[in-house]
Amino acid sequence: MQIHLSRQDGVPTYLQIVQQVKHLVASGRLQAGEELPPIRVLAQQLVINPNTVARAYRELETVGIVIKRSTSGTYVSDAGSPLARRERLRIITERIDSLLVEARQLNIDIDEIIDLLRQRDKALPSPSSAE
Image (cartoon, rainbow, N blue to C red; front, side, top):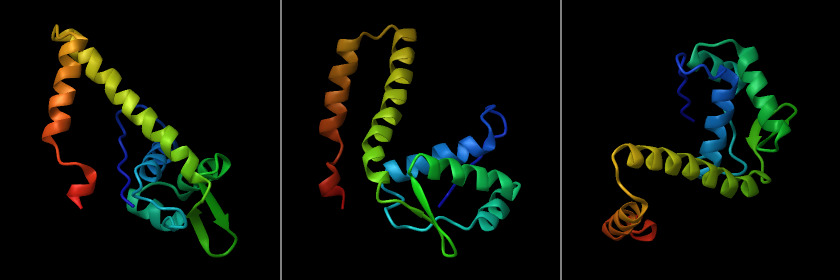
């Protein structure tokens, strides 16, 4: 599990961990039942206080993304799946918003963007053929 922290963006460290784990679950890079790194291990990797990782894991547990098994660790919950679609749509919505802002700054209208999206969609391999 790769987590990258930014000290410049003003987002609290524990929230960066929460957001990235949600993204990893939503994208399928973390599957239901997969174990997250132990708190101390992740804290050492990120060079942060273990309490920060513990807070992020508690937050993820509260929203049902992970479950804590008393002595064996923290795992992606099976209930994380319904969130996955909602989280994927949230991620795409943010990217669409950024695209639209940039397009407006460049004086490109929505019809041109839609045409370009269709062209790019045809040019890219489908997910099933990429395997």
